[in-house]
Image (cartoon, one colour):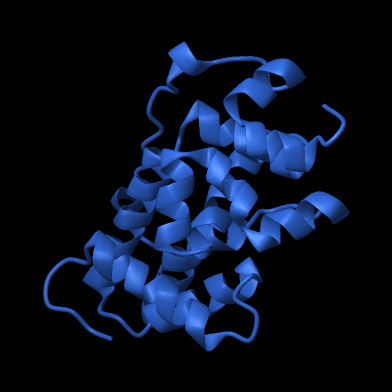
Length: 186
């Protein structure tokens, strides 16, 4: 897959969907991310850099309190880095899942992989996804991504929605289906 000009969000999501279709288990985020990085390494250098910028934008756009609360429920806790890795996992799930969860994190309760994870305490994280462009660029050029390619943009959290993630009553009010799935004793 090659493009003329910069990679846009739609092209980035096509890369992820293609990777998901090509691997034996699309729920294995690390395998999907590795495959996406390998495919991305065949793209021109400028497009690899542009893909990094799209990824950074998705990470910034999903930096939301409600989604962090969902990650906290799903993973039984969630640090700053853990939230980054959770969002990496969410991106690996594909555009539809990502966009639904970003808009309404409680929709994660509908995913079979989350339902299974809730019963066996599996972490939903994919740190590997955060580095696909860096790995692709290194494979394609032998060089690190240029420093200006990955300016991390971490917006302010939507603090008006801030609340204590250990407050089970508040979690149930805000994320009722996910709370029932992950904390069935509430």
